[in-house]
Image (cartoon, rainbow, N blue to C red):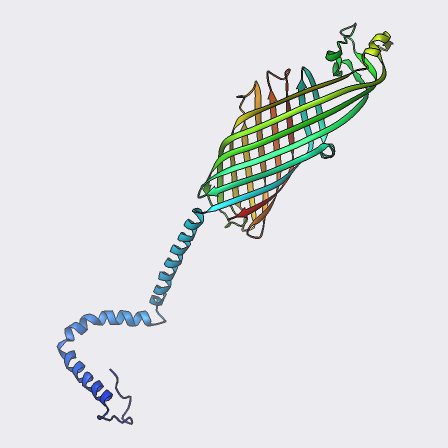
Length: 364
């Protein structure tokens, strides 16, 4: 109802709008007396509405609470949408062990080599290290490849009979079995080796989605079940150049043995096999940009040979480069051992540990 604020305002009854307003006012006044009971019932509600509109009361926060509930529901829907979508992770890394310790046995001849990192880098002909992961929801697939070919050469001017790789090939036997034969001359050894390791596994994620930036305190865990495919090839060439003298306890033996050493030998071995593999990967967000992580896997378990085992252990930290990239620094150990019928038969082993540098991209 509209009423004049004071008597100074003039109301013209001829105005149809004003007349209609006055008539409505009288009707409302008459009806108010008969509906006093209803007005009394409505009074508490009017008071509540009035209090709700008062900015000094706590009731004014009620619309905000409703808005927050809507935002929470929207965030929940957004998380569900993220879960039900594809994500691709691409990892490049460089493994830099200071020492690589290896043992190889070919046709009963065993060679042990400890190579420093500088020699390994010089010996590498080709190398590729790459890991890709595909995830939809909580399920995914991991594929990783580690490929390298190495060529190295070494020369010796003398070696002991127990280290002589040509002894079995040439049939040279010491006249005194319990004494050492020392060969003076030039021995050239050329070694070519290639190794391809391909991992293929199904993965399941528990916890938060792995991202370069994650909420502080959030965790993520991956379980891996799959197979490791390994192809390894070794080839060694031994060559004696020039005349050589064979002595036993400082006494030169007959010249025929010296001429017999002027020969060469080549031995090679290769095999391809498959190992069952289990693994896990865990991530903890230290803050939005920094993460700590750990990775473990094991394969083989002696199923493909008398000695057949491989494994990786890795722990480190990662830093976010924007929302889609991440760099990492970690300490890594990798070992592999395979022998067909024991360490005295064909096979090899290699053990490495050192710094690992990584770079990851996320595509979602």
